[in-house]
Length: 462
Image 1 (cartoon, rainbow, N blue to C red):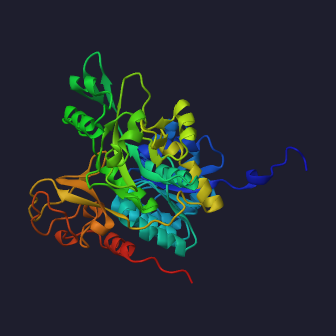
Image 2 (tube, rainbow, N blue to C red; image 1 turned 135 degrees about the horizontal axis):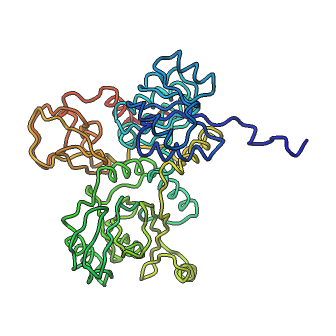
């Protein structure tokens, strides 16, 4: 064979993907990365604003001649036959497209669910970026995928896939995992010189943090004092709860309390913070998922929305050696924190797309199950007729606070948070009340059916 003759994996055609929500922030990171990877090709880009997608691709450096705006099935087929990227304004056209895997990134619970379901039924793999969809219908979508011999998986680059994969890796080492989780999206950056703490573009005068930079002997007391010092800042987000619901499905870990702990903690403290209460930490039991707010100084590196696993140590000398090398080990030596301080959004997603299409490999080892329920409590009195509008960067629902309940503790009629999105209340819900299915007048029937199907036991293999 000539040395210049292509062989092995280089002879495989590029993996062709369809992308919904193609004008969004996540989509940009994936499209930018795709330019660097000859093994990956954006076949169909779908967005409600297709002109914006064309403008985005031009800004990224795509050759305008390789993209074509189409509005019907014939145009889509012609574009694909010519090897061009089709840009469409509606997901209904995806049924007429040739591609290997759908990247679902609309963020819309209803539209995203139908796009994923239809792709799986058509024998296409699905990489799910819309955690809103996954938190309601992920279990059922995975079952549909298995029935059709394709892969349904969260996408690498987002915390759910990264954390599930990290959990699987740590568990494969035989380590006993006590807690897993991630950092919140925005760090708390404290400047001792000014006494100010910054979270993204918001600054708070919080000089008390200067005396709370060390945990001290009473870890819960220090964490409580830190929380009071930064109380005016909104640290929790619906997106965090939603991601932890997806992680619960993939790992079986559950929240320690419905509002999560959300400790304000430095990275070096995580092994002490996420210890059991009898060992000085905050956990009531092992097997917990949680989110923490990073506290750091301006010159210190960020956790960057990364993921962690806290484990019990075994051989003291081994872990003392690792602590000397800079690994995070608790002060009493009983716990250690193993972490990845990054999530790269669509920059990392090609790993999922190539693994799913070429190897049939999802992000996690186990099939997802209903282990926790992302629900909502009324943040104020909500009268009948209220439309539960979803919006904002983190897809919050106005007037509803997200909570995460272990599935056995959730009432059977609990409404999943993103099934309630955009639904109308059929009756009054008092402040603090859990939103139930009976409270919703007009939730999406397909999404509701998927929620109910996900609660049923998985069918037994023949």
